[in-house]
Image (cartoon, rainbow, N blue to C red; front, side, top):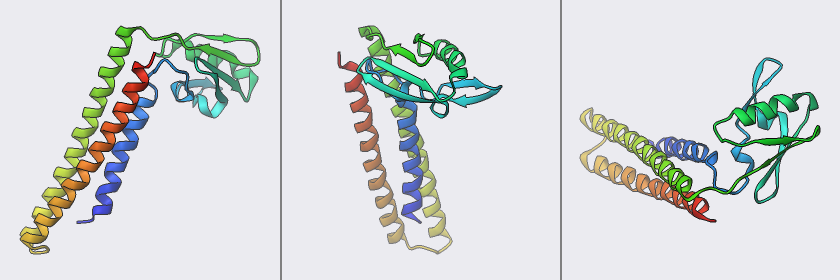
Length: 182
């Protein structure tokens, strides 16, 4: 059993969770809201973060400055057609997106969504744990490890998983706090 390999798998689950919730609106402007929107750039789907500088000069404003001004119209179109429900104002050089305040109902929907994604991540992590436990049992049956080593390995796996689940819970609580902040 290689605990470092187990940790790498759990790290990838944590990173995936962070990426999943990054685009969930909090009522505050962040580049993460729009950076992964795909833009049709010369008939090639390209991420916005590759085509423009994205900044947040004010808490409720995102400014998108394309490196190539000819992409401005395509960027504006892609942002307005995204599922974020945001509209940008194009002044010929940059696109300014004002983030409207969230309604209480919408905040609760986002909190539920975050909880759902956190639970999906926990389930994924538990599946990784199950695979590791099964591998340990197989090693014991084949005589590669003793029963005591298997129990020690299982405890180490469970303790590591518990730490990672606490990390997921912390990330979830932080994002929930940001969403509920008015």
